[in-house]
Length: 229
Image (tube, rainbow, N blue to C red):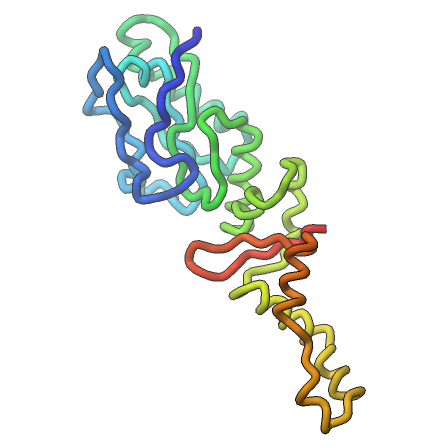
């Protein structure tokens, strides 16, 4: 059974203030007032710190009803699918017409941070990302955005450098940890030492331009840094 793809309600993968707003009612039907809406405020007791998806029935949506459920995504794909199947089994459209509700989409997300989840995203990907966020925090979501190959998802722990105020702050900390300032103190005459400095800003820029370090700018300030090599 195929249906015209509806516009995605809410905010896909953005966890923004717009999330939870009901979509426009498609022509030819009326939105059922007693159906659950993808509104995070209605689910404060359901562990909102865990990544979740709001999965909805497409046949219901195409016929003017918003039917779906918030589902904990930090689980195995088959567990997520089981909850989706339960949601589809309770379809108002199926109860009314006897026609099965088989197709679904991700209408909204919660606590996925920087990671964008598409409407028809693969459950294996959703599960892997959600588990990573649950274990490592929002930096893992940033990793999904900066990496170029989905197969690199498992390399997060090896690639993650840390959270810093800026790339320059990381470059300065790296130089200090390597002892280069102390080396200059030993080899440069005291009369010249005040005039000999490492170009930290230039070093930081070169790390970025060369791809040695991948940067994700946090919305609240600061950066997450990843090894790009």
